[in-house]
Structures are given as structure tokens and as C-alpha cells.
Figure 1 (cartoon, helix red, strand yellow):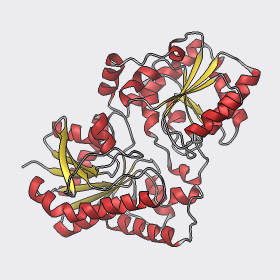
Figure 2: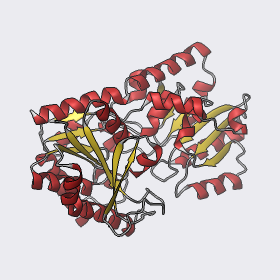
Figure 3: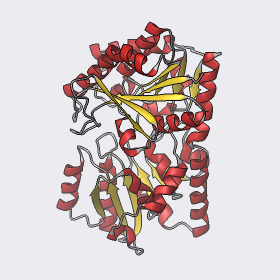
Figure 4: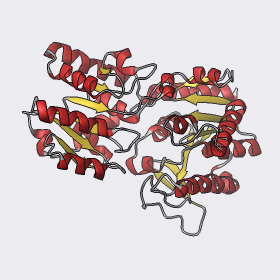
Length: 414
């Protein structure tokens, strides 16, 4: 009899559209191995007014390459305010209310894996698992509410934070198994006074087969990318305060004034900060940075193939001592180009694989010096960084990650 597993992730809606992403790749691999995976997500796309129509029902079922997707009605949320909280609550409540019908349609799952893009997903997954005597895996991708406290978006002693801390400990104590995307998950548990022994680390990663297919099939024509005279530094992802793209703009300003003048920063993505930063660059006549906007993910491999250096930036947060696993890092690694980051963290993959460098957080000077190091680097040393990046990508393919997940599932069901 096939093992059934529900992969619950509020924001996996994008995975249906892109046919890519953590839980889609898990599901695809599990299908090959004879499992019956189902991805459960919101019907609304993240930071968008677009949605999958559920009509008058609480959910609708579709599929992508034989992977079933259940879209739970939530409503759109394009800000971080009350509409986001309402969307989270509605997703979790409607999922719980729909669980009887879902079990009638798909059969009772053997395992529910609920992913903490927000903690109410945990709660819904746990309550369904408890109600039907199903094994429950809590996956932690973001530390809630610790991330918001560290960023100053929430006070540690406020009522909402206290409630979320209690929910976090409740889930960590009662889950049958815990998975962290960050390598220091066990250390975090000890720091908050817990000692759950069934703790595992499965990093984010990449489907190299899909990446290389997209590299071959989809070309993004762009004059800046095609300009062989430029030393191209590329960022792909959300343009938000959390990602501090303003740091990249400030560094571009330094190079604009002092040179080298063939260094160009090429920013792909969208977000709340894009318009402000774009206007700032224009007002300061920064000709060495350009915002290209959001592109379909299938074009990312072709874009990164024309990079000389990939970059990601962010705040210095104490919680990063437990590790850092941004999805964009694995696209960067697969491109076979070096990476520069100013996010100091524990378990640093750039240092481990020597495929890039991490400079001091909050220091434009260090970021400038790091970029110049790659700009002036001898070709042999540069190629070592490039080869190490490919090695790191190969070590984080989802076939290997699914081996880890499969072992966790089998151990739970023995």
C-alpha cells in the first residue's frame, strides 16, 4: 500500500505556477518512489491579486506534472498588515474545516508535513494529525516569532509575540519529528530550553536537471547582460527592507564616483522598495545600476549564466548564528559563479565550500573591497570559486534531500 503524505505550505501556490520549489521537488521525487504526495497551499499567489479560483468551495484540486495541489481559499494579501494576518488565519481555519472532505477524496494520509512559512500552518497540520491519529512533522523554514523580534517588527514582550512563542514551543514538544532548513536547529531548541531528540536538518536546495533544462531552453535577451565589456554583479529576488537592496545601491554609488566604471549592478525582482530605490538611483545619476523588474523563474538560469558575481544582502541578525538558507543561494551556486554576501551567519555555506565570501554586515566599505577582490582576482583563483559553487549545488540536489525525508518518514511509520 502506498504511503500518503500531505505537504502543507501556505505559499506553495507559486510552486504550482513555476513547477519548481522545495515541496514540489519533494513531491516529484516521492512520486517516483511510489509515494502519494499532495501539496496543500493557499489559492492566492503571494504578494499578488492573482489567485486560483475555488468558486463557492473552500478548496479546489488541480495538478502539475501529476503532483496534486489543493488550493485552500484564503483571499489576497499584498501587504504585511492585517490582510496578511487574515489570510494566514483563513488558510489554517479553512484547511482544518476541509480536512474531512480532503480525507474522503485523497484517503487518510500517513504523514502530514506542515511548513512554517507561518506558524498557523503548523497548528492546522497538528490539529488534523491529532484528530485522525496521523504522524506529524513540523518543518521550520523561518523562526517564528524570533525573526520579527530580531528585525524590530515586533516587541518580544507584546501579546502576539508571547502567544507565538508559546505556540512554537507547543509544536516543538508535540511534533513527532522536526525538520529545520537551517543547520543550527538543534542549537536553537537548546537555547529556548527544549531537548527534542527527533531533530533533522534538510537544507533548501535545487533541481539541477530542471535548472539546466531552463538554461538550455530559455534565453533572456538583454543588452546589459550581453555586454562583454561589463563586470556584471547580479541580484535576483525580492526588493524589500529585509533584503537591504539599499546596500547594493550605496555600493554602486561608490563605484559610480570612484570606479572601476565597467562594474554594473543588475537587479532582477520586485518588491515594496523597488520604486524608492530606483528613483534614488536616478536622482543620484547612478548609471552603473539598473532595475530590470520581475522575470519568470525559468529565465533565471540564463540570466545568472551571464553574471560575473552574484550578490545577496541583508541585515545582521543574531538568529543567523543558527544558519541561513535563502532559496536564491542555490540558483546562484548552480550558475557556477562566485557569490558575495554581507549576511554574517553560522554554518556559512560560502565559507564551507569556498565558493564565495561573506563580508562584515552593515559595512559598504567591506562590500566594496569584497567586490574588488573578485574584480581583480587572477583567473585561476576565480575558476576555483566557480567550480566550488557547482560542487555545492550538486551536494544540495533534491534527490539527496528526499533521501533524508524518506528516512524520516520510514522511521516514523515503523
